[in-house]
Length: 403
Image (tube, rainbow, N blue to C red; front, side, top):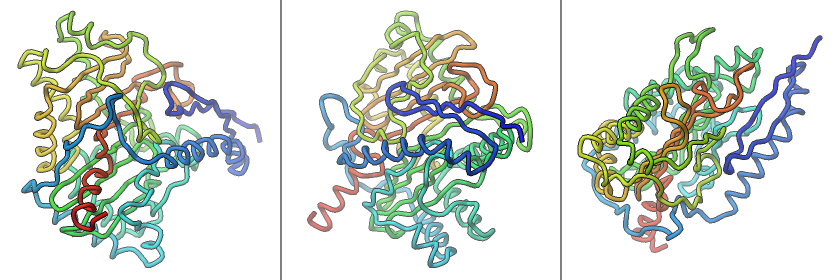
């Protein structure tokens, strides 16, 4: 059999470094041998990250204190708790054993937005589930997310089916290789949460009483517009892309200049992807308080494209929190601003970090080199130590258990 050699570029989430791994589809055994180097690299990268005590995204001035008080939001989390209990109940004892972890387990930080050929995931995948179990899993997502957030998640999963088709049935890609874990016990008073981990889709969802922290959230896709196969027409991130570009283009020239960090776009400009929980990232770019009121409202609209993936009530709570820190919010840009530009932007404040990035092609064969619009990564984090709800968890343990 003639071997078809496919060059696979795997972004490494340290600045803009990349490694290149060759993958052959001659046999699955041969394939795994070819990928073992990358698999080892990601395992070592994760192990190094986990060896560091979690501190979160901070500026060089350190953590801002008192940003995330424990309080009542008035938005019930009872439906989320009920759905999580039903999901757990649907699993066998053996499945529960590998799916449920302690609330403070390192499992929270064990996620990676690469394909399953080079990263081993915890928990139970959709592919392993019965029909009833899948329904329970999607029910948990449905009550935790908005209708838009649920649909976007499903559409991202579809892109892995497309990549499977484009790569000769490669088993590293599959629309059901998305893994669920739960941390803690679903409760109305004690902290708990759930995680979904898979290629181009990672959701961390922490619950304490009626407070929710949905971060880190990684959402991406390749291809962004599917032109063949089972999901022809599937399209991702056009609003995040186009609203972001429109906002930048409509800024006065002097404010554009203030926002632009560099006009040179790299293959990967994102700062806070997998294994980057402890990043020192200073505020850069355009200070939002310098914007006119209409431009501020346009930026609110852009931010909402990411935050509105949450269930509506908690989406509103998070947007109010973001607006409370409006005068400490920055917008930064990398790349050109033409109609067909490829670019990176971020929105950064004490309570939110949003990143959007056009990436180099990885999974679609015969693509152009360099960053393209057909491969997008997005990232939402909660700075100052509250990714995974860790600052709320710390306060809860100190208050309730004297830790």
